[in-house]
Image 1 (cartoon, one colour):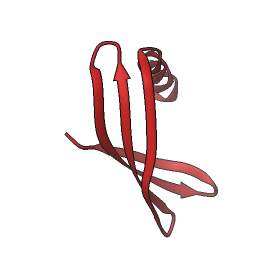
Image 2 (cartoon, helix red, strand yellow; image 1 turned 135 degrees about the vertical axis):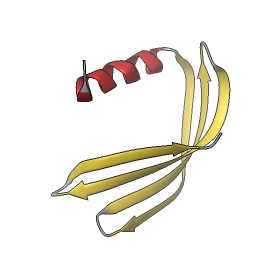
Image 3 (cartoon, rainbow, N blue to C red; image 1 turned 135 degrees about the horizontal axis):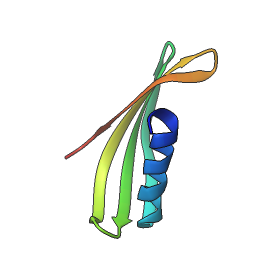
Image 4 (tube, helix red, strand yellow; image 1 turned 30 degrees about the vertical axis):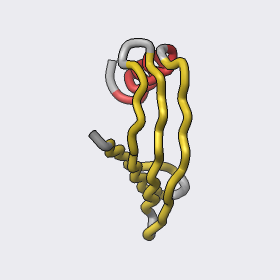
Length: 75
């Protein structure tokens, strides 16, 4: 399975294993058709334990739809 369906299945499996998922938007910016957002994530996962990390997401829009999306995480 490839593409969107495979990603939705993977994300669903991940979300089922969470006992806590708290997210706080720290900063957001838009430059042209790109939106940049910095998030603080606090999660408790059944296998991985408790994690606190930052995520930066970049989304590029065209005609009101996301055409490119990337995520970067702190380590």
